[in-house]
Image 1 (cartoon, chains in turn yellow, purple, orange):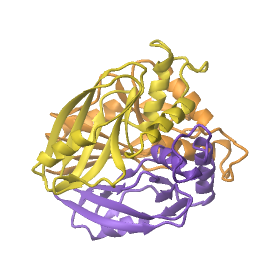
Image 2 (cartoon, chains in turn red, blue, brown):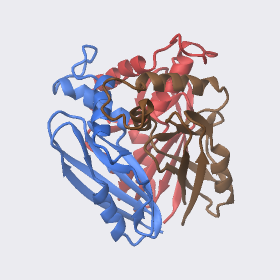
Image 3 (cartoon, chains in turn red, cyan, orange):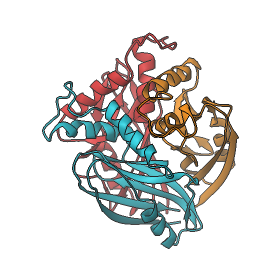
Length: 138
Length: 138
Length: 138
């Protein structure tokens, strides 16, 4: 039993989601651990992580539509707007998506379902440099 | 310290939630690990897992009412509707509930509160065969 | 590789969030584990845990505004209202925030981002005694 930790950096291109399944799967594939959990953690409060459908990109477009509805940009009720209309909306989206995921693995492979992909959601309007910690326990 | 993994299958009967606490607790009870984490992962993007109140079934009926409000079936804004009105709604509900849970255990017992139960939420209208991976780490 | 478990109790003062980062960090600092995951679990279905922005308290005020919008108190659609207008709203907020968090650590320190704090969200109107289980795996 052991712990392995990796630090990854992704540069986002503004609001939207990008798949990081292959990045995580590659490090799981190189691990000496035979089975366990892959824990993905993003060190920010204005982006998020989610597992969702990986076949049809309109799923993630529709999730974007709903996130915009649930946490509107520039809502008049917000008090926190130092960094613009997307500032508080990004923190609210972060609450809904969460900032970590954990996925079981065995024999060097993530035990994801056929239609599941791991996505980094940028919740700010503009692109940012986003740091992720991958912890493998097993 | 070790990892144990179990594969479970549940057949749902359409939208709604069913308690799986006893199924998880039974495997924790058989474990040789003295303390650690039980991680429950569902390998699908159109159902979910949540811990909620286990005494009054109207709590889960009300959660259903809210999920329907948050992610309406057949919303005209959706682009993804290949499999019907409940298709995109199911993916959106999956984002909100999440597809994994982790619960501490010790001495063969889940450390759940008195009023907490573990539920599999079917987000599609019709029943499906749902695969779960239980990983025990400790 | 080992597991450490701690039981913590917090007394909340009614709806709102309180930072518990230092409490978790202190126990991580005392751990003999060199790296791993800190798992925080709240044993209740009417409060929650979330990681959010730790600099400007208006962020958490705005999250409160949104939680109130997403899960209104005393909504006429609720069937579960035994304990008052905030009863079902609290369970719904618990679904959205979740009841557990996991954060990577190394060398006695949580690997949180600069602007991330760990918060206990009381979802009921009145204060409660809330039990938390902290599991350190590594």
